[in-house]
Length: 257
Image (cartoon, rainbow, N blue to C red):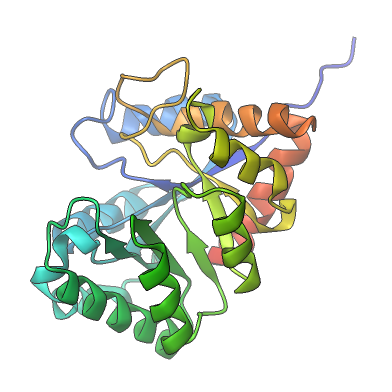
């Protein structure tokens, strides 16, 4: 009997350096590879985490790093991370954006840090990874004013069809996390059904946001297969097709080799 091919996924956004990662970074990456995950984008949120992402990429050929200043860390200033962008394993700027839910940094500092990182994306021709929470209008306003970088990803998309359409109007990519498996996430599930496959990425945002049936536990990159399969089921499509499309998109956005 011929074996059915296994879907091959890419986790487009994870934080494997985080101490909550089950078994630690090296073990979690091995578990993910066994689950069919063939590449990982490890994302920085400030200087220390960006350095940790770079270190993970140096030690694993299938790991790539981003350098960014999360809106929670905006008060540190973008100058605290810019020298790290010259590292050879860095493939994007971010995660950057606005978070008005927690307001861990003053909103004006968040906006200025976001604008500066958009400018870096333009100047260096780098992809931009966006975090936005409770700040859709300001996020779009700043993007429109500064110009949307040609390769822009809304990570951990939490909007519905209306927000999806606003993203697509700006030719951005949309990345879905384990939230799409939550019973309460009906608007997000509608967006996952409506999103064109050529604009979709999948991610874990691990160790956060573990999908059902792992909700409440620390997340890990292996679970990107659960996220992607849930989206395939919502769309009545094969997991193989969703895996192939999202992996192709991720490689294209980040220039992964």
